[in-house]
Image (cartoon, rainbow, N blue to C red; front, side, top):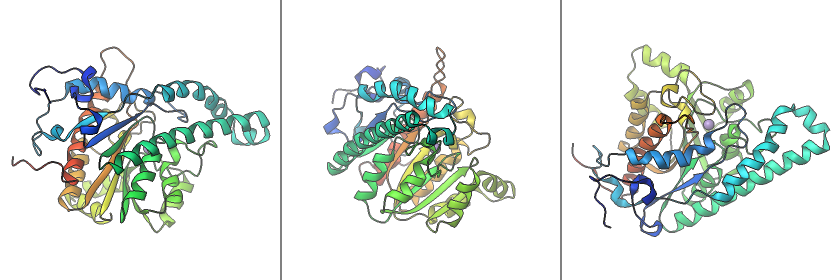
Length: 350
Ligand SMILES: [Mn+2]
C-alpha cells in the first residue's frame, strides 16, 4: 500500500484517509444512517458520514499499539437505499410518535403505518446481519457505526451465532430494555431487551453508566439472572466513597464471559463528549474512565470480539465537528484494542 501516515490525508480515499480495499482489511465498518424511531432529537443518522469526514483529523500513532491501522481499516460505502428509507420511514414513524399507543391500536391506518416502520427496521437489521455474517466468515471484524441504537441488532445476532461463551458489555445512559418503545419492535430503546430475548447465544449482559430508565426496565434487569447493571449513581457513589475506578473496572470485567461484544452508546459518556447525541442525560462516565475499562478488559485476557459505536450526531452547525471528532477517535482506539484482542496487531512498549 502506497500510504504515508505523516502526510495530509483525505477521507475521500477512505476512512482515516486509508486507501485499503475491503478484502485486505481485518476490520470493516458498517455505516448505518438510520434513526427512524428516535423520539427526542433526530440526527444520529448523520453520524457515519460525520465520523468519516472527521476521520481526516486522526493521528495514527497509538501509544499502546503504535500503528494499528496497518491491520487494515475500511468503511463500506454509506448505503444510499437505507439513507433514503430513513427519510421516508421517519415521516411514518413521526405519526406513531405523535399519537399515543392506545390511539394507534384503535386505528387501522396507524396500525398499518406501524407495521410499515417495523418492516423497514427488519430490512435494515437483515442488511446489517448479512454483511456481518459474511465478514465474520472471512475472518474480518464487522463494526457497526450508527445511527441510533437499534442499528447493531443484526451485528449482535451474527456475533452471538459465531462465538460461544459470549456476552455483551453495554455502555449507555439508557437501559434500552423496553419491550417495544412507542410500539416499535426495533426501537433504539429496545436493543438490549431484543438481544436478550431473541438471541440464545448471549450468556451475559453487563450494563454500565445507566441513569435513565423506567420502572419496568429496572424490574426486568433486576430480576434477570443474566443481567448485571452498574448504575451511574452507584458508580459515582462508590468513586466518591474512595474506591478507585480501576478496581471497579476489574469487578465489571469479572462479570463478563470470555468473549465480549461491546455495544457502545456514546451517550453513556458525560454529555460534554457528545452534546448533540439523540438523548443526552447529565452524569455519565468520563472519557479516560471508559478507556480504562476497555484496557482492563483487554488486560484480563478476555477477548473483545467486536463492538459498535452508536448515537453519535453532528450538531449541523458549520465547523462544529466536536461530536464526530470524539466519535472517530474512540472508533480508532476501540478498533486497536479489538484488533489486538484478535491477535492481528501487537503491543508497543511505551
Ligand atoms: Mn442506547
